[in-house]
Image (cartoon, rainbow, N blue to C red; front, side, top):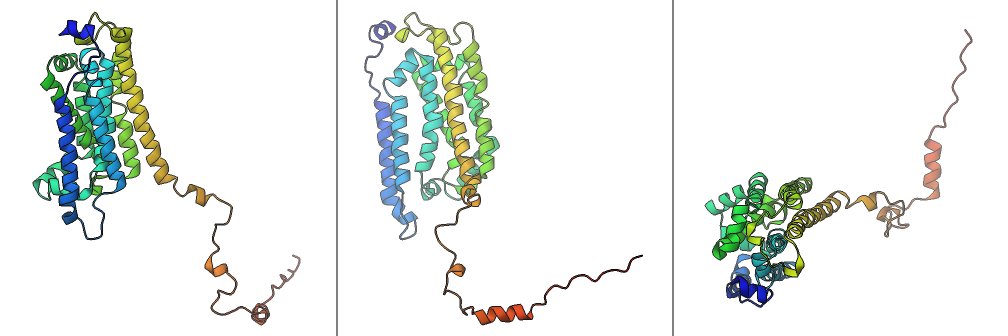
Amino acid sequence: MFAQAVQHPLQFQWHPEVWLLVAFLTAAYIYMVRVIGPNAVPAGTPVVTRKQIASFVAAMTMLFLASNWPLHDISEEFLYSAHMLQHMMLAYFMAPLVLIATPEWLLRVLVGNGRGYRVLAFLCRPVVAGLSFNAVVIITHVPVVVNESVANGPFHYGLHVLVVSLALLMWMPVCGPFREFHMQPLGKCIYLFLQSIVPTLPAAWLTFADGAVYSSYDKPYRLWGISITTDQQLAGAIMKTGGSVFLWAIIIFIFFKRFAANYKDEHDYRRGASMPTAEIVGNDEVPLTTADVEREFATTASPQPPEPTAPT
């Protein structure tokens, strides 16, 4: 198989399991929205918004690109940096899109209000979700795990399921459908900042490692002439720079949306576009006349100068 791969490193490969998965998820989403949704929301309330539909399309596109040819085959047979990009797309980009695409009523229908809801509430606690996700991030970079995932297709797909599942839990306190699971804006900023720190460890390890860290990627044929050392450094850069920049961008967005929303209005010396009603001439209930002003001045005692004090 390797000899064939060397001759045709980018030869098209079929992945019907990925196509069936994307088709099944799309059909299930359409069924829930069109059949279950109208009975699950109050009359006159939209079942799904355009933003949710767009997020679902983007999530399925991300899933298809990350798990299909050519990225999946390059990541499995040639470059660990492609493998890192694949995990980044699934965990950091696709997972939040899936949650944004999911209406609240849909998740409540799937989870219910009993034990399933209580289990989900526990798993979505920031400490539990954050530690679980970062633990699997560390585990998926252990050489034994990586080498086995490359040699074992079902194990590789199983890791993807685990990574995506824990990524969904990790993102739930930030952008999940259940608002009661969300943290306060400042808490979200701190939470996402902590998520960007843990990947620094394996990223630094890959960047400064001597020799091949993963034997399964140490092959004589080097795709596009990328050496094993360069490949590992690219993987570390993707993990550290790509993930951190993405998370920090979200942190900045949340911070300014919450804490700088009224800054412009509060520090603007110019009058607003509309005049207050009380300042509009002729809007007073009782018109103010000159006689009213003179009467008020007459009844107001004029200030008297202080009496001089006797010298001591």
